[in-house]
Amino acid sequence: MVTMTTTAWWSDLLNDDLAANVFSFACGDYGFVYDVNTNSLHGLDQAALQVLEALVACGGNGDKAREQLQAAGALEKSVIDEVLEELGALKAAGLLFTKDLWREQFLPAGTAVAEDVVAGLTKEAGTPLVKAMCLHIAHDCNLRCTYCFAGTGPFGGDRSMMSEEVGRQAIDFLMTHSQGRRHVEIDFFGGEPLMNLDVVRALVRYAKEKAREYNKILKLTLTTNGVLLDEEAGRFLNEEGLSVVLSLDGRREVHDRMRPYVDGTGSYNEVLPNLQAFVESRGHRDYYVRGTFTRENLDFAADVLHMHDCGFRELSVEPVVGDPGEDYALREEDLAAMDKAYRQLAEEILARRAAGQPMRFFHFELDLAHGPCLAKRLSGCGAGSEYMAVAPNGDLYPCHQFVGQEAYRLGSVTEGVQRPALSRQFAEAHIYHKQDCPTCWARFLCSGGCHANNAGANGDLLIPARGSCALAKMRLKWALYAKVLEGATER
Amino acid sequence: MAQHIVTLQKGALQATAQTGGCGECQTSCQSACKTSCTVGNQVCQKSE
Image 1 (cartoon, rainbow over the protein chains, first blue to last red):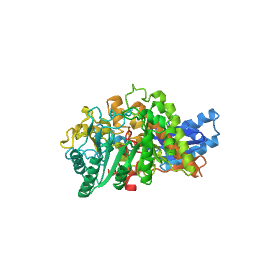
Image 2 (cartoon, rainbow over the protein chains, first blue to last red):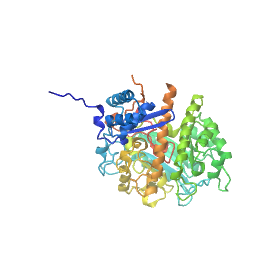
Image 3 (spheres, rainbow over the protein chains, first blue to last red):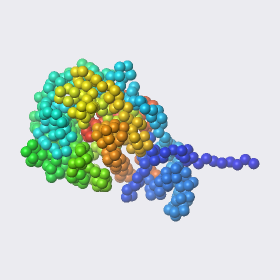
Image 4 (cartoon, rainbow over the protein chains, first blue to last red):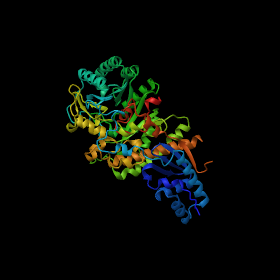
């Protein structure tokens, strides 16, 4: 006698690390599951959430999950089976419980994901392919922001300005080192770059000439505190097509406490109208108003909403980077307050949009369907390999946050990259080499965090900074929740 | 007909592993934040 047995669809899950491949969450009436390896997102009702969580807790064993749920009197068997069937259909369609196909390929030490694929080091000469540069146009500032990682302008060195000559050398470096890449980027950064506007003007002209000569598509950005952003400066930025990042911390008292002038008085009264007039003058295109939040405004949702009330639509706030000993530094015990703020933002943005008030929060703009390819997601920001910062004297660093740290000096725009091994360390610091990242559900969204944060917290590019990591996951959780809310509204 | 689950987004990340990266996309940290490298909200140059 032959006994026929059928294999349950979940038998394939039994050896998987499910927590690394799916992430589920519920808040209020809305639950979801995110499939890590495809970037698929599914809304769940209460029953589906319960079954999914039981299935994950039971290591993918559907029979055990059913038993447990029934024993707890949580759900009827028929409902459990309905959900299991739906989950199985999603798996069969390749939209849930998919596997990480790349971990083994990139796990060996010494593998630069970027090589041959997206950036990193060319095989022939070990020369970095650099396609983006942050030019430190001014190591001086007209503000004395309390939390400034640049030491209020000079990055631990002297207050100085980049000369046109050094800027030209940096542009030449970018044109030649970007090799076959057509898209190249230059960000004019500081300190405060508008304090050296004549050099910015000259370098914009030069960069455009060189881009034509080298057949490059040039993207220019400038980051400013807005103090010197008058009509003339604004006209130049608009006519030359620079994207801008505009610094504003939100509510007057928050902004003024952290962003005072040299004499200690607040800058809000001058900065806000400058930014408003400028954004209006460019028809609300190609800008972000970006704030920094600290321990002193953990209710930063109110600051983002204040920016929106002031007429800005493209918004971002970032957690402060700084010495953990400072009063304003974020601590692990602050995570609950930050969680509350991100939730409030997700819900309020949706409500305002529904009321016909356009508003975008940078970190919630996840594009699950058309976002970056896998190679980009593995390699992250590219600091130290495809992206470098240039100090006023022409020295090269992995990014703006490393400027002035001798241990991370890569070379100079005249001498080139003198430490290719250090550059390679950055290229190889991808998610499969980092501690905890290979099995983290957020790996393809956060790319292993900021190199500067990680180096600053642990002295090691491969160990994610604990606080930043927790915050990134929290922010991504609410970004996905915002997608779910948006989907529910559209249905 | 699904009663308990609704697919909000069909992602295609795995397909991008086959096509490979062209390296033409914007550097993530430059885009707006300058303090984090979140890539999930970036645009693929090929899809623009």
